[in-house]
Structures are given as structure tokens and as C-alpha cells.
Amino acid sequence: MFLDESRILSRLDHPNLIRVIEAGVGRLTLDAGSKGGLEDTTSGLVQGANANDEYRYIAMELLLGRTLADLWDLLAEEKKRMPLRVAASIVARVAHGLSHAHDLLGEDGQSYELVHRDVNPSNVFMTSRGQVKLIDFGLARAKDTDRAGTQGVVTGKVTYLAPEQLSTRASDRRTDIYQLGITLWEMVTGARLFLRDTQLESIAAVKRGEIPQPEELNPKVPADLSRIVMRALAHDPDRRYTTMGGLARALDRWVEAQGLVVEDEEIVELFDRVFPEERVRLETWYHGVLSARPTVSPDRTIAPPAAVGGVGELEAAAPIAVQQAVASLPPNAVPQDLEIPNDAETAHARRSRWSWWKRR
Image 1 (cartoon, rainbow, N blue to C red):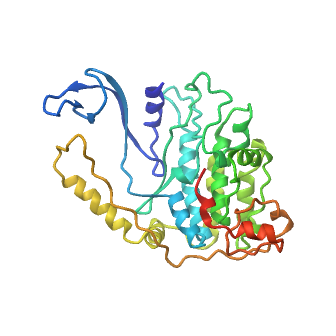
Image 2: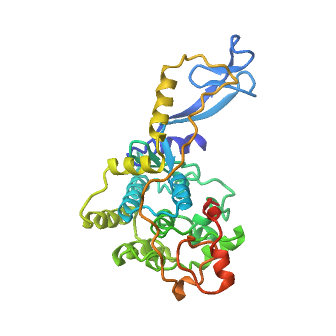
Image 3: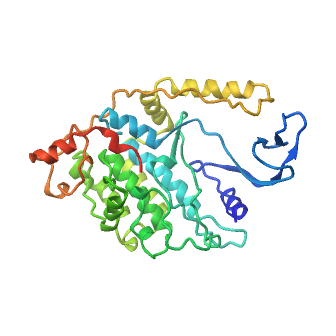
């Protein structure tokens, strides 16, 4: 099953998807010069295995950068929001990559009906050179590779689940559309949509599907962008975009209507402002690895440089007028610099620090 799924993923070829270079099965052999370790000529040392054991492996491209979740965590600490144009462009790129995955055909010309099922900011990678890539297809399923016994099993991060993932209804490409819609909603509002105090409360919130209009939290969100977000987040899958390509094109049109297309260089600028010196440190580490001697001790690894924090001057989170529709939002779900109700208890809860942003 692993090989079948890995070989399907290796057929994906899109600039906004992480590339699978190779997948297969290897056999470990004893290497007398490796201090009793086991070594394969292509995969290096593997500890805790027996001679002649088989192992499965998957090799993917190396990406240097940070996840979208990393970016948001720093923005949240500084009470900043990403510019709407950039947010829409990043999500559009992910949508184009997913559209390619959804439309992937087998050698027989039939669709694999591939679904990612775990689209969330932790699986959106922004490279230090301005590329945006969807990663971690570990929960992806094609139509002919569903494992027995997974019916009814909840997979993925709870706060990014689609309603049908909590029911007996099968997931399809519209599940990915909903999950990406959650990501877009959170990017343009600066709030978490379904995060509650406990996992059970978060699951209940997903099932209810009560979603405020983005402009209720961020008045800078225009009506046409809000309509795109809310259509992606329709509780009924039949009311969402029919295809991921439809969502991607809608976002492309909105970005183009703003008068300036977002290029990779603008994302690099954002990356450098949020993670100063990180790009130089990562590339220095990378070139150091390339120039290092190929023989490395079994108990040593070359670690990338420590992350550097800090946020530059970005769009400040604008105050919102808390309306009736927003009153149902959970405590802690509104950034601390936003206007809040006069109710003392609610006000105190919403002034709590940004630890709510950590992804669950």
C-alpha cells in the first residue's frame, strides 16, 4: 500500500507541490566499517534494524524556509496581519497545486481522485526564495488505495476538518476546498475559526459550521473577497466551488483586480521582514552540507541553524466593530488589539495572550 501511494505521489509535477523524487524498498546489509551499524548504499545508516531487513523509503526535495503556521505565529505575537493581496495569492498558489493533484490521471487515463485531507497552514511551506508549496501528503488517499478499517476514523488537525470528515460521508476534493477555505479565512481575519478550549468543543464548532463573515472581524476585507472565502466554506459540499481550479481562478482574478500581481520577490520580501537573516542562515547551512565530507558518524547529524524571530513593519491588525454575529466567537479568538464587548468577563477572556494561536 505504501509503495502504491508513494508512486502515485511521485507522478505529481507542479511548482506548488513538494516533489517526490523516489520511493521504493531497500535491503539493509551489515557494513563492517560502520561500528556495527547497518548501511544501505543509497540511504545511509539505519539504527535498530537487523541484517537483510527490508525497509520502505520515500525521498523528497529539500525545502529551505518556514511553514505558513510559523509565519502566522510571529505575526500573531506582533498583532499583525498579512496584506490581503499576499494572503490571497499564497492560497491561490496552493489551490493551483491541489487542482493539479485532484486532476492527476493514471496510465489508464482514469482519475486517481486524489484528496489531501490535511490542508492547513502547517502543511503550506514558504521557501526563502518565494516559492509556496503544499507538503505532507501523508493522509492523502486515492480512490483505489483506501485502507480497510479507516471508515469513520477522523484524520487531520481537528480545527481544520471539514464537516463531512466528522460524518459517514466520504471525503472528496471539496473537502480540500473547505480546509483551504479555513486557512484563507484565518489569514484575512487574523483569528482562529474553530479553535476552542478543548478538542471536543472544537469538533462541535466544526459540526455546527457557524462562520462569521470575514469583514465582521476585519473591515478591510472587501465584499468580493469575502464571497470567495464563504463559498469555499459552505457547510454543504454541493454549495462549494465544484473544483479546486475554480477557487484558484477566483482568487487569481481578485488579486489581478487589485492592480498588481504578487510575484515571488514580494513573498521573499515578506519572508525577510518576518524572519530577518533566516534566508542567509539557511542557505549558508545548505552550502555547508553540500561541501561537507560524505562520511558522517552514525550518531551525528548536521542540524540547520537556529530560527531567528522578529517582525518588520507589516499591516497592523485593524480594529473591528464587534457585531452580533461575532458575539458567538469563542473567548481568545479575537486579537487583543481589537475592539471587544463591554461585558467584563468576556473582555477579560479576550485580552488573554496569543497562545491560542498554536495549532491543534
